[in-house]
Image (cartoon, rainbow, N blue to C red; front, side):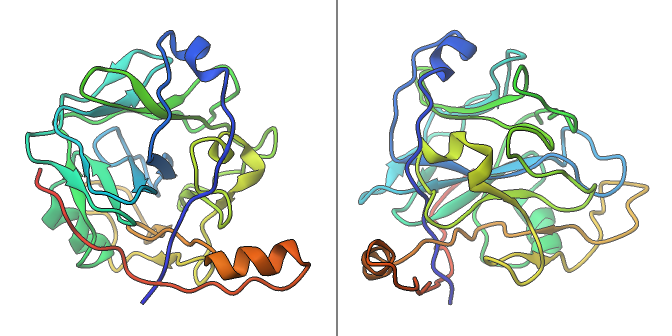
Amino acid sequence: MRKFVKALGVAGALGVIAGAPVARGAIVITEIHYNLNGSEGANQEWIEIYNTGPATQDLSGWDWGDSQDGAFTGNFPAGTSLAPGAAAILVPQTPETFQGIWGDGIQVIQTDVGISLANGATALNELVVIRDQNDVIVDGVNYENNSNGWPDDDNQASIYLTPGAVDPVSNDLGVNWGLSAVGVNGAFQAQTINPDIANAEVMDIASPGTVVVPEPTSLSLLALGGTALLARRRRSMNSTA
């Protein structure tokens, strides 16, 4: 069993970059897989969102996309929701295909279209956002590649939000993101090569459905200079798509 959570961050510039108001909420972007092994496309790239709040979040009519490019998916179907303390993957692949790659028990919200994410993203592009039913940005991440503290992708591994930074403010900073590595913070190698990428040669590495979060007691220990202990649990499933 694994436990996951996100930290709090600051992103006052997002509203200006995206050209839309930002309404901070419980839903946070915690993982981005923009450079899978092989010549991946928009239909294989995905992001993970996590519910930091105490209640189930209705995601009916929400969408996600690249706000800088003005590219968004269609609205999530009525009845789509995310339980408190749960994570979901947003991807055009079917839940069956995605779970066939990564394993059972991962909540997948299948989108009608894919979003093409740049491998060489900079501070001036690739603003990944999740929007509510009124098209108001709930969270956004302007990720970069190997600059300003952001990890350098390796055509295989995702980038993920590190423990202690699971919130819509902390996830704006590159230093709070890491490159997925097997056995670190819940990351593992896929159980098969992505069947929708013709020239993929190795299994990807990521932690879909998993967000590592320090327990409150661990945060107290950190404040006292102690060592934080990470409890883990597997994310629950609660969505229709």
